[in-house]
Length: 184
Image (cartoon, rainbow, N blue to C red):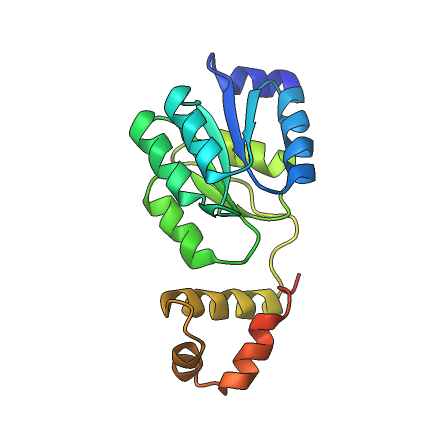
């Protein structure tokens, strides 16, 4: 597979990985190097934007939520400096509304964490009109419900009372749901 991937990557193999989860970043960087990419890593919006400005990569994988801000800021810098760059946004918070916003500002695709190197590779190299293969483990019904609640919550600017009103749900019930981890 690595030989096929090298042919698909193209002559510019530069890849920027931006994530504040250090172990995940190291593992993904190592896996993508094995697949033929020339990897550069950043752990913040500031360092990711600096690399994107100085050496705009052909490919990028950017986490949506970073300690110093929003990964969409890095996506915007990449779009400005290198419009042909293929960008995949990672989200670990089920914020599908925000991931859709990422696609609207120029991301090629988005993936939910935890994503493995094969998923990232497929998303980075899928053709313009070609859809990546369906996930082997699709979301459960509980996860879809949770994603919908998160989307409405984001659309209401994280206002619990307004979100509860729109979902026709008691505010405390909503607070309990938001306090829990996302279902698998």
